[in-house]
Amino acid sequence: MVLPQALPHIRRLMRALLPAFSLVLVLGAIAYLNPRAISYFGFNLMLNLAVPIALATVAQMFVIAGNDLDLSIGPFIGFAGCVTATWLHDSPLMGAIILAGCVAAYAALGALIQLRSLPSIVVTLGMSFVWQGLAILVLPKPGGAPPDWLASLMSLQPPLVPFPVLAAVGLALIAWFGLMRTSYGAILRGSGGNASAIARAGWSLLKIKMALFALAGLFGVLSGMALIGITTSADANIGNGYTLLSIAGVILGGGEFMGGIVSPVGAVIGALTLALAASPLLTFLQIPPDWQVGANGAILIIVLAARAQIGRKGALT
Amino acid sequence: MTALKTLFARPWIWSFVGAALVWLAAILFTRFNGAGGMLSAALALAVFTVIVGVGQMFVITLGPGNIDLSLPANIGLASAVSMTVMNGSDSRIALGLVAALACGFAIGAANYLLIRALRIPPIIATLSSSFIIQSVDIAYGRGLQIKPPPGFAGFTEMQIAGIPVLAALTVLFTIGAAIALQRTITGRSVLAIGQNMRAAYFAGIKVERTCAATYALCGMLGGLDGALLAGYFRGANVDLGNEYLLSSIAVVVIGGTSVAGGKANLPGVWGAALFLVLLLTMLNTFGVSAGVRLLATGLIIVAVIAAAGGERALR
Image 1 (cartoon, one colour):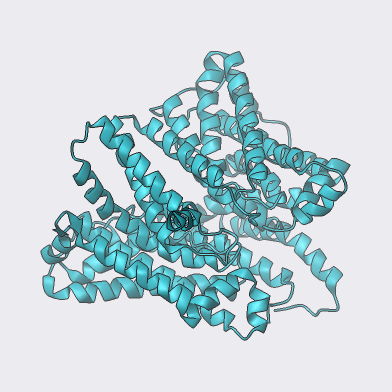
Image 2 (cartoon, rainbow over the protein chains, first blue to last red):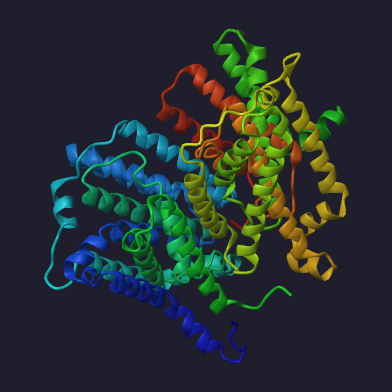
């Protein structure tokens, strides 16, 4: 299973290709089980929820790039969705102000974590209650409606390529360029790789942490909006599953929990893989409803185990 | 005076102070009605958080990244298993408890296998396994409506002079766990691995075995908690453990255990568990809505953690 030590570049290449490979594998399985699904219309249906999942994964990626973890992104997306379906629909200006406030709240959270050197995992776990509570206060019962422009944007049917695919490619390119090809992107990732080196070079770790969290908040808000544009109504628990999906997507896409190692393109591919594996594949496999959650867990384990076998850096012993 | 000073230098004292403050706020609101009852109810409920909190604390102490997110699913499955084995008869209580422990042990061992053999990060490994456990529980426990044996249900809520027996037993268990952590080789190994796994390995500590034992222990405590919860709440349920995902982690951190590993704090688990339970009691006494309750709980947890501050944790 372990590749020879002498071939590090091949190992690196395989690692970079693994997310794409898992996606091809899942697509291949779907094509085998139901050839008709591989069509413009089929992709539109199957990747229905891929856009919000991909946005959530990119949001989580920014947090992970700084060696943190956001366990509140799911409820946060739910809250952003509730605001989208109520305030943004009824009084767009007020809604936009609240959503901008959400991004500011995320930046403030980053500042708090950096200033008090708090464990982000616990702070965000606490924040997940806050967002959930706020979501229930905004929308006690399921309902609401997205702004018209949002609903029509999400149901766009461009020629030849389905909208979710276009959106995913666009998102991957933007995130890739911003984080991997700009100098500040390198600084952001550097804060996860070697924070003291970045600080010695004269960068403010506080500003970096705030930027990373603000970006996470921004993409979280976009994810919530996209989600409501698709589902056309909100409910306070709508985003809860996104916490795990986003973390798994980042890791599946070749990211590491430590060291500022993330891959924006991989993360988007990971999110697409999960979106396909989560329900279309299981439906075609005719997995009974009782076992769908478990099958999701099993798929995660299989893909991540494959990734770890290829990417293993040398055991402890 | 110096005794007081050393007392306040302990990191766990603040969780007890917090618990006392919340309790005072609640009984001021009720004008001292039911102050004692509130305390014994809080003790009875805190037990369930403490048991899983201790398991979680051992796992977190193993070092950065180590965490068990499968506890809620574990509790759900173990509650169903134990109730089925007990089958409502008092003579099978011990058998049911053993079954719950075995179920938890299997889950803990499986978790460690995923982490070690397949090299999946613990946070994802335990979450994925919790999905599978949940599915097993749904398929196995569907329509399961077995009441706990009357003797067992009575035991979980038995009180002597206002003190729940289960709470007293759990205090003894916590003291035992504290001694095991600080005074036994296995306990010291857990701390050493949390401080520096490589150094611990080179010092001849059996890293693999200790980590495996720790995850298995955490699983067993989750299983035990499932059986006890099913007794206390009169039946097994898939969602029985849901709230213990957050609370098991929160009590560990609020109680002064380092998330970076290598520094555990057992008394703090009790203080933090009482704090969380009394916080909910207080908010319920104030009669706030579900949304406000969640909001306030979250804000207070974040505020407490921010006030306590942290060393440079890894995450």
